[in-house]
Structure formats: C-alpha cells, structure tokens
Image (cartoon, rainbow, N blue to C red; front, top):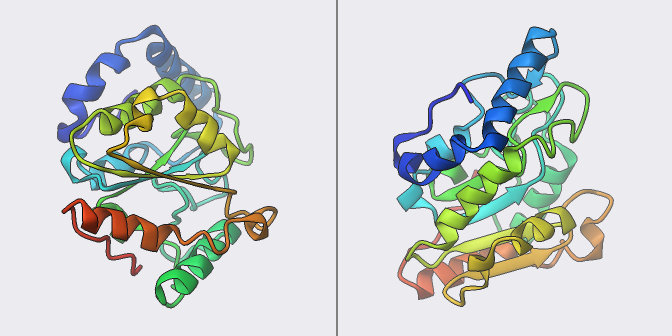
Length: 226
C-alpha cells in the first residue's frame, strides 16, 4: 500500500501491512492502475479516515461497505462525499434520522470531515473500488486491514460506540471478539439505503444513544452538526 500509515496508527497496523494478504493487495492495486483502470478514491485519500481521526481520538466507529464508485465522490470517509457533490441517498436518510433524533437540520452538502475530526471513525470495509463497479475490491485483502483497525479500537481501554448499519457491517463485526466487551456500546440497525431505511433505520436514534453513552462514560458527546 503506497500511502504511509498516519503516525498514531503505525504501531498497531504496521504488522498487518507485512502479511501476505496485504502484500497481495498492494500488487493488485498496482496492476489495476497499470492496466489503466480508474480506482476511487485516488492515491493520497485512501487512508483519510485514519488521518482525520487519530487512534486515541476515536469515540465512535461507523462501518460502511466500500467507497462510492462515481467520479469525484469518494474521499476516504464512509458515507461522505466531497463538497459540491450531490448528497447520496443513504446519506440523505442519515441526515433525516439525525434531524429526527437530535433536531439538527439537514445539511446541504455531504462532507463528513467534521464528524471525523470530532472522533467519528468513518471506516469502509474495503478502502478502494474500481470506477463504476461497486464491491469490486472486496475480498482483495482490505478486510484484514480494516478488521485490524476495528480490533485495535475494541481492544483499547476507552469505552467506544460501534455503529453497524446493515447486515454487511454486522457480519464484519461478528468476526471481532473484542466487540463483545461490555465496556463498548454496539448499535445495530438496517442500512440507511432507501431500500431498507423504513424497515428499522428510521427511528433507531443512533446519535442520541451514542452521545448518552459517551457522556455517561466521561468521554464527551459528539457534535453531530455537519
């Protein structure tokens, strides 16, 4: 993987970069780029989630599946898009629930960097995708890397909220034993996609639940305004 690890994550994640799976991933990405395939997000943005949310600052982890695969959308944060890009349908629904839950008006943009800087680790399962091909970089080695990220947070001393939207995130979390630690709060619901949001995402109140838990554990609430 060409992008260097952010300093706060190096000790925990450097060993996984030396595994056969991650070496194979690096080779795969180089080969794809050499073949002229467009990969999102571009180099330099693939570890944005780790860069904006240092290891010791993580209060909440929100798990996504893989980056948006349209031009100009993905910038290294799950569910987030760059300024000037139309807000995707799942994020529209996240904003609707945020407004219902905490009374925060829906933002006109989809850039969630403010959440990341406030301690919300917006982590996709796979950190790259081929343009126009959703899920194309699943099972290429990213899962080992992102499993290690989640396990590092879950094994740490700080009570943390893990938000699992949809079966994909919930299956991923099931592989990480430390998430069963009663020190943590694990929130599960269906995905905010328009296909499922009305089946249990709306009304799940993840933002207020997260803040109540964080305040009760002396970690301070997240400012969820975008």
